[in-house]
Image (tube, rainbow, N blue to C red; front, side, top):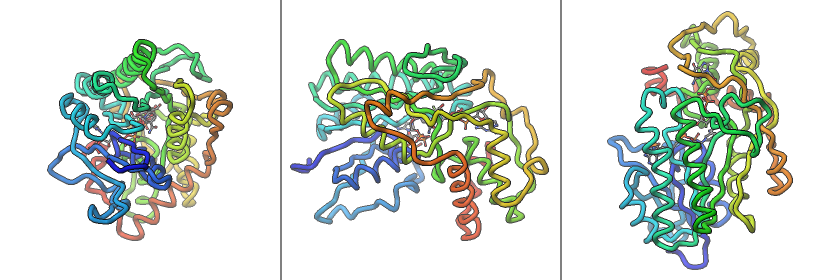
Length: 342
Ligand code: NAP
Ligand code: G4F
């Protein structure tokens, strides 16, 4: 462990949020331990640009193998690293996939959190913990949703996140652990996984504009989401762990838009009319849908001094621009998940 420097451990560092959070913490002088899963392909595209030579004097980004399904490894890592802050972002994070893999989603997203909490408790660590909860937990509770809104999960993913939320509350109250539940509404970026709807749309826009694709197949165009920009949200996670007392916070923009509106703006960015290209396909419908998420982040604004900086239109434009640039530069990687699973 490095002396004098704050130490953070991130599960899910290879994901969208983990990569931005690692950047954020490294810029603030933290030593960052990133937990990665062993796989036959080395899956670190989102953090490759942060690589540091292990022999360098200021070597502060350290990757370690681990998995939220593996309690003994989690305990071993925490015993060795004894981090000041733990950001638990690791998850099977796709709602539709959670209907196909409900048991696995529960193992990672729900019981995985219990494994982490039990390790911290049994080792007697003072680490501050951020738990990545989700607006999906609110299900169809009427918008706007805040920390006071009832949870009505409508997917195995949402149910698992709600279990995690309550376990974190339980460990906070029963054992006095410093645990903050972040109830984050959808946040996106050019690093968003390609099968989430925003990135699926912006990648298709870029490819259609370049003549590489002719149609985009989507499910429910009427669903409304509160879409923000991921780098704004990782700062909110950090702020939650800098408070005197642990608490639960909603992070959101307070504005919601439909999938249809996202399409309209994204295609308009490259002067195309979305109606010519977007087709409906039932395979992208979910067994149960969450119709309208729109967050009330007044508490985060008041207590954390947090507010989102990027507007909806700016978000759509920056995502389209990034995908257009990637296609033009030949960096459009269409052998990905999206091609096989769409
Ligand atoms: P993401 O891009 O899907 O990243 C998920 C991360 O979790 C990846 O690094 C993944 O590793 C890792 N992971 C998956 N299974 C794991 C396991 N068994 N053990 C350890 N790590 C595992 O998700 P994200 O968008 O960055 O979201 C981060 C967290 O916030 C997730 O918990 C998500 O559920 C939650 N959340 C996200 C949003 C949003 O709008 N983005 C909103 C609310 C809550 P691999 O790279 O190896 O797959
Ligand atoms: O982009 P999505 O898959 O995100 P969803 O389900 O809202 O979940 C994301 O946000 C949650 C926070 O609320 C996170 F907790 C979760 O980890 C994840 O990051 O779908 C958004 C909406 C849905 O209503 C979906 O039915 O878009 C609709 N949609 C319409 N056509 C589609 C598609 N979604 C996907 N993924 N693919 C489609 O073709």
